[in-house]
Length: 413
Image (tube, rainbow, N blue to C red; front, side, top):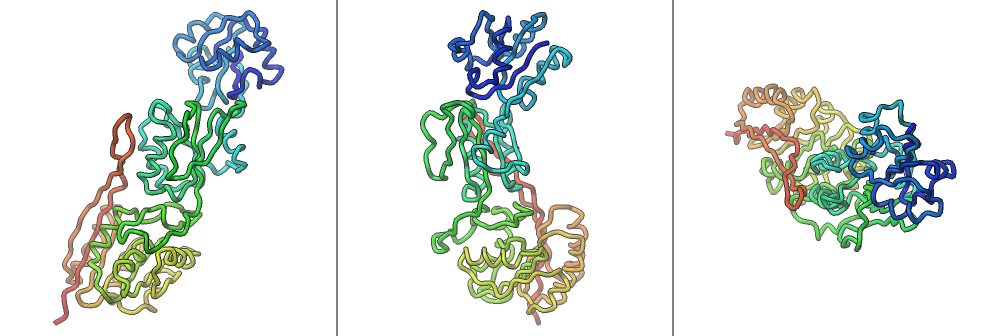
């Protein structure tokens, strides 16, 4: 049998006694080059031949007919480790795996945080699009296995910044976990990277409520996504910044009047509309429980005051609202046709209704209703990309495309 032993960064001294004994008895030891100096200087080191395991193809040839061999690997060899290649090349029947805690376990242990609900992602040899896409889902906790050859923690930080979520996550840099010189530290968004970041590091992103902003210091239009408080059970379920800007333009907001935000989510579009037109009456409607308090909290953060925030289901809950001049119908759902029909019965002359959609089927269902009601109809499709690091340059990571259906009612008379 070939013993495949998982280690932390303090090996071999940190290995259990039974595994140290296997090392002493081995005739061949394969280990990452970074462990060679520690092995040779270890007081228990015997006469075994020491080879590097950093090139798996060459390693397999040297292990094929070798008895009494030990392979040292980082953490759990079967989790993003050398275990898969050893099984493919030598056969599972020749291998006995003895895993150590993986870097993910060690990182959350150092942070004293349960990790059963944590997500993880590897960037080793992978494009950064996967991290940008995962961040749009707003995971509660995300461990990122970095690729030092592509920037490591710097790459993660750039993607977090490009996603507009620097204020929504605490970023923890974990270096040389398990080694006596391990280092775990939180990096503030504006702080420079520490000197001498060890190549053996990972990053943990922990979601947290963004600090209260100064409303007067915020940009008038296009607030970062990470500024908004989220539903804890559905983080990321909000209109992204690029789409939000387009919807506000299509609403053609008047200086005064009534705006309905149906399917308001966290309130992002309607609340930004109030920053542009403070005299508008915003009525935000969302069926999800707890939405009223969340939208109210976001309104306070932005320094605006809606006319009303209602938890209820459209179209029934619309009956209590004043007739609208502008309507945004978001949130999806199977009853949007019924919602739109209720809106068209109430929309004032020169009123505008805007409907963002994700599917062509929704467009085919809703457009005829606007046309039959005599509104001037327009359709547009919007696709945005956000810059993400790629080697020494920048590539564009796509966001989901959005269809926007717009109807304008004629002026009376």
